[in-house]
Length: 106
Image 1 (cartoon, rainbow, N blue to C red):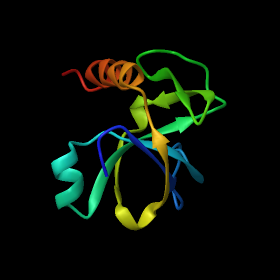
Image 2 (spheres, rainbow, N blue to C red):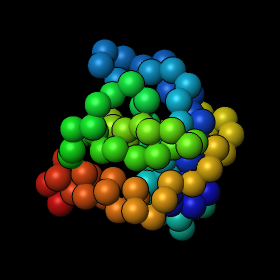
Image 3 (cartoon, rainbow, N blue to C red):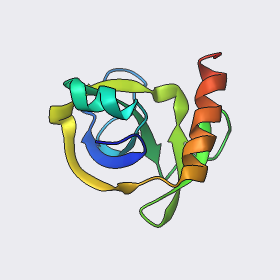
Image 4 (tube, one colour):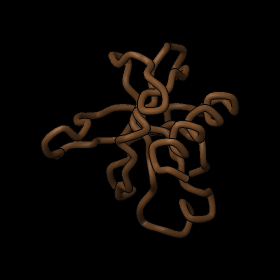
């Protein structure tokens, strides 16, 4: 489980305005942490949102245009990960990092 991997993740149950259902997510945590912990930090991806950096960063996922929803960053238990779907490009990962820095004021 490396930083930048894309996994299908079951995000249900969710509450309020949290992104729900099964969707691809990018592992954004450091690879050694992903390996050592029972949780991983992910950014959900959406195919219906419009790019609005820094909150919704345009990326390519599974050969389609999508947005990484940076303000929906979350830690999930590894049992929510269903299957690996691929990897995000280095360029897209860099754009997600820029979005996260702005959203989290880092």
